[in-house]
Image 1 (tube, rainbow, N blue to C red):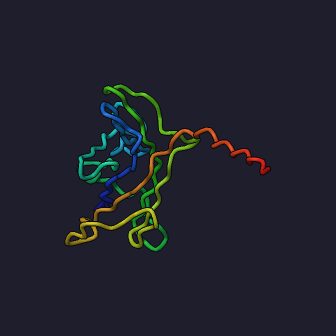
Image 2: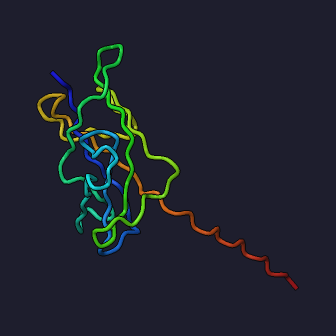
Length: 147
């Protein structure tokens, strides 16, 4: 029997405005195998904003079993920004993000929520902050000469 991980992606993206959306794509089949046309849309609400989340957990099969016989999940993923339903750009980063988790324990990026009746029902929340373009450094104020 295969082991699965149930994962909710949540990203903080306060810079998005009306008409913008954020989607997540990853290196596994359940996340589109890095194809934008298969990216998963994250949603927000007045209560959730500025966080955007997958509506339902993504059920992802374990990618390996470690030497202790524990199922593991390793994948890369990236957030894509859309405006008016069209791809605008990738989040600003030089490389995709990486998720690696073994069941148990959870790593510092994951929070176990909705424990369910078994490990198969455990839902993990991946919480990120959208990477933004670097802003120009704030100019250093020039000291005012004292008379």
